[in-house]
Image (tube, rainbow, N blue to C red; front, side, top):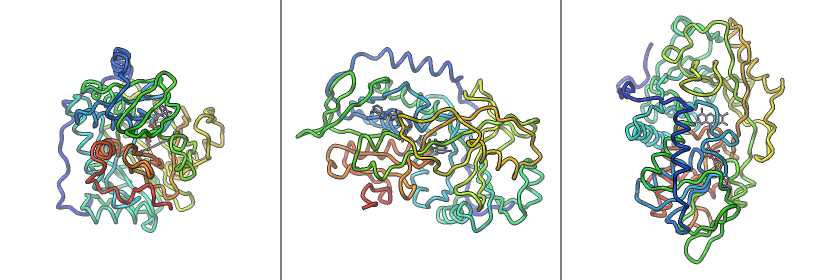
Length: 423
Ligand SMILES: Cc1cc2nc3c(=O)[nH]c(=O)nc-3n(C[C@H](O)[C@H](O)[C@H](O)COP(=O)(O)OP(=O)(O)OC[C@H]3O[C@@H](n4cnc5c(N)ncnc54)[C@H](O)[C@@H]3O)c2cc1C
């Protein structure tokens, strides 16, 4: 295997000393911490509206800086109604969507590592990531752009190497076969729980099952009204995921919420598909929008979720109202999964074990919105529209939002993610 940018050194951090507490124990521990908090005060330095992926990270970063922060979450922490459910999320650096994300990813990687060091728990699993597509496909052309611009190490597999190492995939000969060795996956529910717990350790107050009904700017700061109380804060950070349009009507016509499907399949044989032997993978097929992607087989006991080979089709699907999502699945939901398996893993006999629904909040250009809120720049900032690829960035987004809330500006390069870019 040859390497692009072979002078670059891979991260060598050892994960061996880290724990991976089972999901039930971790959930019980953090739920007990949440329940044991005293009744919240009415006045805060910052309120974070929505303690999901971005909100938990923002609460933690604000607490690290010594700000008095209140996080408000309408459901349990975590939950399956928004964007973060489903056991695993890919993290990678050769960002085919846009090279400008790579510096933010450097921050994200080091902040995830910091969370691991602070909690002693593993959240990042470095499996490597395969990229399969024709060289003209945006997955490959975009990846090369980012890898070249930032020297991200990428291995180039020959067709013979791929067939020997990863015989599960049957690919057309002209496909490129690339691997990013330092990529892998994060465990979203664990990340959220650990960030919330650490934020509480550092003095944050986080309330689950408390829904924000409205917020309004005051002469100084913001008033936030929930179904339980009325609060005042100098700053409001809106991290409401699929409900962001409700909280910021000016953004609602730019945010399209879609219903997405995740599948777990039980293969007839599991040889070579375990965590230590099978990388995450992505594949671009010119006949389909977006990409297909998947993970190694993960043990439910350790990672939660159904057992099986998890895979999905990444492309915005049917538009929905986040409060009225059809959670039952039907045969049409299986179509992309069956297409992928029949086309690219034809030797595999499988049964679909589980299909779950999850939501994307898409912007028109599928890039995020990270900004102070136009018209309310002094009081409010917003992180929204993660368009199905935001989780890996949470730990960096927390830092950007904390910068906006604390100083009104950030040194992170997020100009290309301004709220006003859609006119
Ligand atoms: C199927 C699927 C696969 C994905 N795969 C990947 C991947 O491989 N890699 C990757 O990087 N990303 C991936 N993503 C994207 C990533 O998960 C999302 O971008 C990310 O979770 C978005 O975080 P968020 O904080 O905006 O939303 P959420 O995590 O949903 O958090 C928003 C929170 O705000 C709360 N809230 C909203 N309104 C209120 C209110 N009025 N009062 C109180 N609380 C409120 C919600 O209940 C929710 O908890 C995937 C997403 C899906 C759905």
